Amino acid sequence: MNKYSTKDFDRDFPNDNACLEWLKNNRWPNGIYCEKCGKITNHYRLKKRPVYSCEFCGSHVNPMAGTIFERTKFDHLRLWFKAIAYMSVTRCGISSRQLSRDLGVTVKTGYRMFRQIRTILSNTNMEPLNGEVEVDETYMGGKRHGKRGRGAEGKTVVLGMVERKGHIHAEIIPNVKANTLIPIIEATISKDALVYTDDLPSYAGLNKLGYTHKVVAHSQKLYVTGKGIHTNRIEGFWSQLKRSIDGTYHHVTAEHFGEYIDEYSFRYNHREDETSMFKTMLAQVVSQSS
Image 1 (spheres, one colour):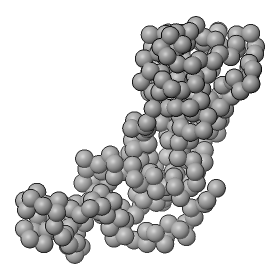
Image 2 (image 1 turned 135 degrees about the vertical axis):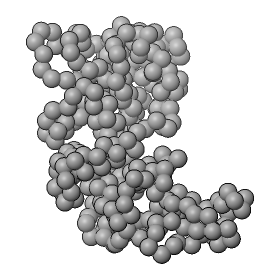
Image 3 (image 1 turned 30 degrees about the vertical axis):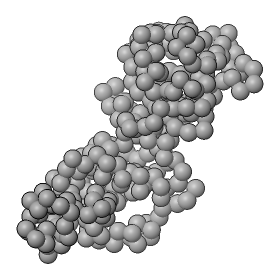
Image 4 (image 1 turned 120 degrees about the horizontal axis):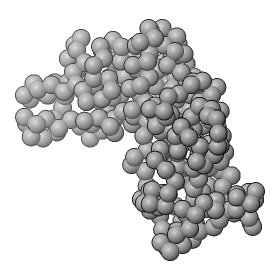
């Protein structure tokens, strides 16, 4: 894996001005459109202010406006970039308290930055999953007495769909009934895909919908059925997700599970190397700007 070090960060973003210039160039790669002039015009940075002014009418634009940095003081912009770097290069995630210590800020400030950065780690604009796709559900939450696995009380149900040679999509669902699972699968997976699931009856209608559907009989304690018929990849993701949460965050309330699932799905989908992860996270700031 290509590492992204502190030396690399200092080279790419030596100060707040460099961060602002990066943000401006990536938000408006073809130039800034001036609404007053009705065209793309040259904009020049004003001294001691994080704004750029149109050369003709003098109207201002602030690259930080409409992003997670909007309420940030300009001299803290590089600190935000560094926070994104820390969150991107830690393979199993980083807690808000550890982020606070690494940045040298208060726990309250670190937590706010942590939560804001997490809002950009979504995969809502993904292309439909294709090729060989494994589908499975898992149950997350604290230990409960009584039944384990499917049907356990007090657990959060998560549905996951992963390409064997590509991306993953995971989301919280209310239950594992067919009328819950099937619409999500149809919206996420291309009909050209080869779909692997276990023998939960809720998946039984996938063939009728046009999918090529292969089943692993988990209820019979079988985990590989024929050549390549298994759900090992998605189960491996569940295992890594749960270990990372237990090891890094220790305890997660049900209301925040969605944020953790989005974060680890994002990590999986952009796992090529640390540099790529960091630049992709920065790009998410731009893509989600208003």
